[in-house]
Image 1 (cartoon, rainbow, N blue to C red):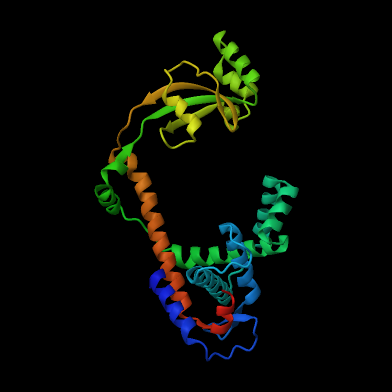
Image 2 (image 1 turned 135 degrees about the vertical axis):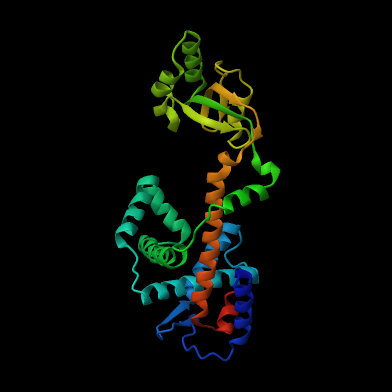
Length: 314
């Protein structure tokens, strides 16, 4: 069953469930599993999710969301609960250790103050983030074991995919092998240019002075394709090989570029594309297998939706 079919079935179910006897007025959905285990989707869970969507859309806090948005959120939460119930039924538990590592990683990446601000902005608590990571771990294990394990890409499928690929997707844009140095001020940039004119090593100057992540590798950007990087990097396609650029300002600072090699646009051979095609096929099959598995699991659970309570969310 496709997502569109599930969505249609969900709308029909919502319309048909006035007669359901879910007693708690805060319960929007009651889910009963094959082993008669019961879980619920509560009003506050959905209201919080809808509030986050309003904020992302820039809507007022009391703005009425389109029905399709509300139903999409409802479907997502039903599937989440169903998959957690299925994981529990099969004895699959989420990893608290990986959840703790995940929270710690967020704090280290953002800093404690920025992490706390992000929690407030998203209407989350730290414990809710950790719980979400644990639940996500359980669902990931379930899908890996029961949906993904059988996915295979056969050798004969890759040449067929290459033949079906539109001609423009077999082209590689012009590309350049380049380095750059990024400094904070124009004065620093002019000093770099003076040193380059006197014969200083571009790579050594990058290691010593650049604030870019590539500084440790001598400013090496590797091969970059025209039209695939931020606009400032288009300067690389105006330069002669081996000649440093003038200072190029950007939101990051002031850049000096050096192009070491260049290749024109050309068609890519099967051998050059086969690994990418194999990855793309695997991803497509993974998505289809996951969708089929999730739909199959959901169909084994009784989902009862309280229509009046759902309409009150809108």
